[in-house]
Image (cartoon, rainbow, N blue to C red; front, side, top):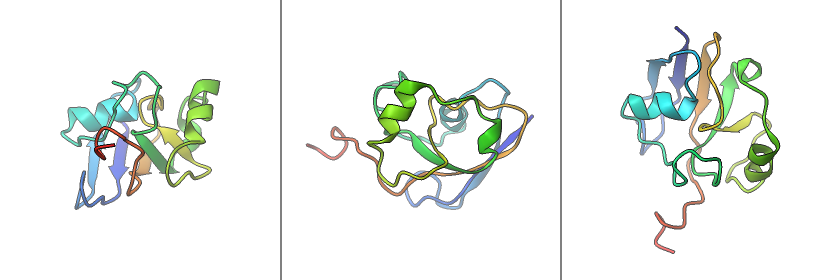
Length: 112
């Protein structure tokens, strides 16, 4: 079973974590199943960028980006060449190292 290593994030995972992930799960599903409550304002329907992550290791093992995800990522805070929406990134056999960016664009959470 692949491992998703999450780098420390002050709000969601202060000490970091290493999680076993079933192959075929999205990164977002695995985080949520392990009580790492990453934002996912659109309920994982690929309609926002709140679950944006940066994949430091294992990026090429993930499924290919679809056009909708690619278009949305252009709006994500802290966009990186290895950025993915965690609700769309499907875990394969390779271990991953991910970073949850410091900020997200979530108008509901920010009381806008």
